[in-house]
Every structure is written in C-alpha cells, then in structure tokens.
Image (cartoon, rainbow, N blue to C red; front, top):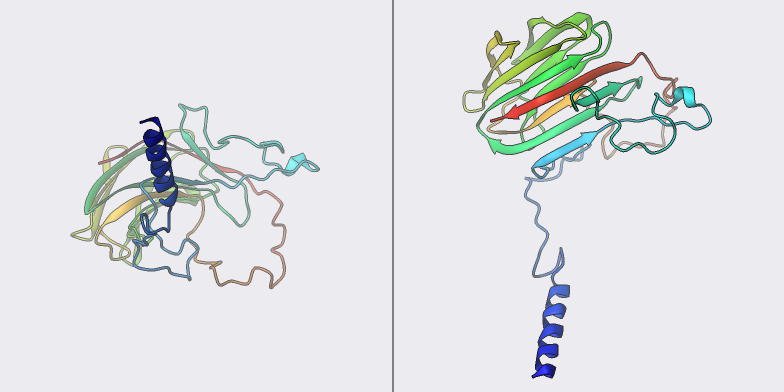
Length: 249
C-alpha cells in the first residue's frame, strides 16, 4: 500500500512538471489581432491591472543631476505623501513619465478622478482613454498657461482652465457605440458630445502621460545610428502632477 502511494505521488509530480507554458497541456496563445512593429508596445493587449512607467535619473558622481532621488534604488519613488496619491514628475528634456490603468473592456464607461498640478507655466499632462489596440479616442490635455483642451474629432476644443496648487475633479463619460464623450471639470460641464479622435468599438485603458504622444522610436529603429540628443542628461524645470481617487464604472 505504501509503495502504491509513493508511485502515485511520483506520477502526479511528473504530470505537473510536464505542464508548462508552451507545452501541449498549456499552449501559448496570442489573443491580439497581431503585432504592430511600428509602435513600441506592438499594440498587444495587456492584462487587466496597472502598468506604470516612471523615468528616474540617478547619478552617484553628479548627484545634482539625480532629480532629488539620490543614486541608490528607490522603491516606488512616484508615490506622493500627499494623500498617498500617484505623483508623475517630469524633468527630462526628451522623455516623459507615464502611468496606465487597465480595466475591463467596455462599450461605455464613466471615469472620475482628482488631479493636482504643481504648476501651470510649464509642463503638459495628457489624459487619454484607449482601446485594446492602443487607439486613443478620448484625449484631454492639461497644457501650458493653465489651459485645458479636449480632442473633438481631428480638431481641439478649449475646455477651460486650471490652477496650480489646487485639486481639480475630472469626469469623463465615454460612449464608444456613439463615438462620443463628455468632459466635466469640478462638477461643471466643459465639453459635451465631443467626437472620438479615432474610431474605437470599445475602451479598456486610462492613460496619464507628461508629454505629447509619439510613435518613435519603433522596434525597427536603429538605435545605434545618428548622433546623441543634445543635453539629454540635463534636467529641465520640473513639472509635477498628482492623481488621486480614480473611479472607473
């Protein structure tokens, strides 16, 4: 009886070891329509959750260029002490900080959040709602000089203004079936019935980015050709934004 139990345990362990990603029991499946080599993420659909990209410069020899984080590893330096909000800070002359919240695919969604901008004279924060392929139908920009703009088809609409040092409540009502969305700022309607900037049948991502959208470099870009960008290691004036109380329904 004892020998039979041991033999059964060995068989179970061997069967478990044979089940691995890519094997016959657990094949790898690509659920996206394909891989687009012209964009950095391949337009692959991410899993539901949160993706955060935060540029952090650390320099032991020249700490003055370390953006105040020092030169050792910092765990989640983008978390702000202000109400435990998410902080996006940009001092890079060419790159940007970015955070993406992935939610369940939907044809209509209501997004609400609070935004704190530490400045208005510099910096740019783009808030976008995307579909699974990375198309950006809903685009709202908190730009220079305290102006808020929203995309309306292929054009831009002046949606209002914002102030530095205060929290602003933002609400988006997105209707992919109609290809329209509404924007409210601090409880007041700012834009109604704006047309999608790109056709999208559904949406499933909320993106925050401290710079203008770009498509370069791609996976096909030769990273070894051309000269280095000038003053790429020299930080510029900091632009800081905090995001809190995100609600997606």
